[in-house]
Amino acid sequence: MQLSIQEYFKTTYNFLELSPHAIIPMHGRVNLWPKHMLCGYLKNRRNRESSILKSIESGAETLFDIVAKTYADVDPSVWIYASSNVRLHVDYLAVQDRLPMGFSLEKFNDSCVAFVAKMGKQEAK
Image 1 (tube, rainbow, N blue to C red):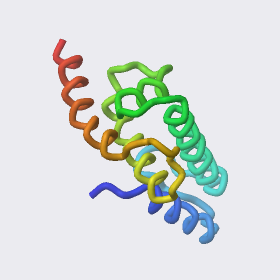
Image 2: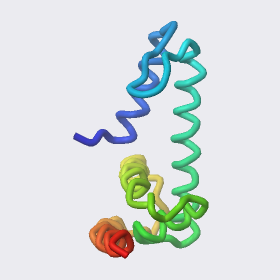
Image 3: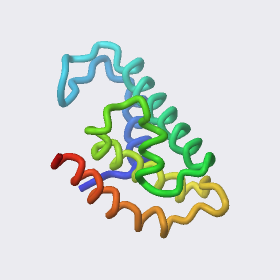
């Protein structure tokens, strides 16, 4: 089951409200500064959302275009993983009615299958 970004934000804010003294993450060490860690997670998500929105506002319409612009500084071999994040953020931006006028969710969603096919071919090389 894949959670939405909206659920991610809600859950993270709920953790903050609990004011835990420590968090034991799924990987890594026990964190004794959970407020700092959780705020860092939220900041990272908001920054990524902003980058994705800027990519769309600058003309990116397909999953490939958005991933390529947003993750230009990341090795393309991991773009397939980044694409999942982009899809979640685009869905969230749509729910928030924050996508630019003229951005076609239908075209974007249609491009997702093509993206996976294209990335699969690159991995096979």
